[in-house]
Amino acid sequence: MATTADIKNGMCIKFNNGLYSIVEFLHVKPGKGPAFVRTKMRNIETGRILENTFSSGVKLDEVRIEHRPYQYLYQDDMGYNFMNQETFEQVSIDKDKITGVDFMKEGDIVEVVLHADEDVILFAEMPMTVVLEITYTEPGLKGDTATNATKPATVETGATVRVPLFINTGEKIKVNTTDGSYVERVKDK
Image (cartoon, rainbow, N blue to C red; front, side):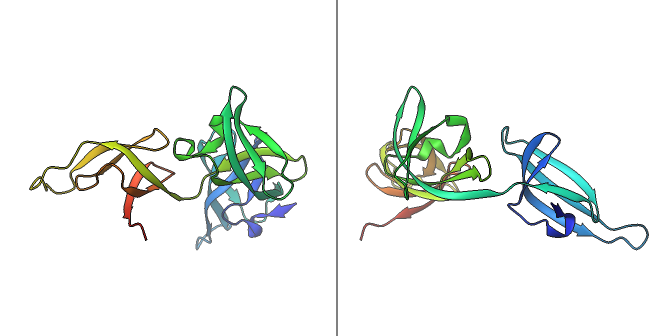
């Protein structure tokens, strides 16, 4: 059992018959009245954000979670198949439990979060950014340099990303996996 003094970002707790991950928290000590902790929590199953206020000193049911590296192998009708990097055990994970699934390619390493006591997979997270090659985009026109102008580009995973006009087919770009936005062009060495 943990208390509100133990709250930190990423902590996983059991709350209202569900598992929640702490996204943000703030300890508040008003001049008048008791202290409290204001939190934003993400439901692990649905992804919805819940705001809640706990009185100071309240006991919380902490859930022990583990982060393990898994390598993406392939997709079939059962879901997305991954291999544990340490035990070489293969598991299948549903699409809705993987963040950034549209930017995942074979061989990518993802971080799988497990409920340590029950050894159940909660969700899988892609790295914050990935480098992908553009397979198709319209050519940029010389002199067409309006401020922040973008065009759609298809990357090697089949996803579409909005990129600046100077990006061409065959170039590699860095993509943010959380919102699918263009970060920067990657130069080949």
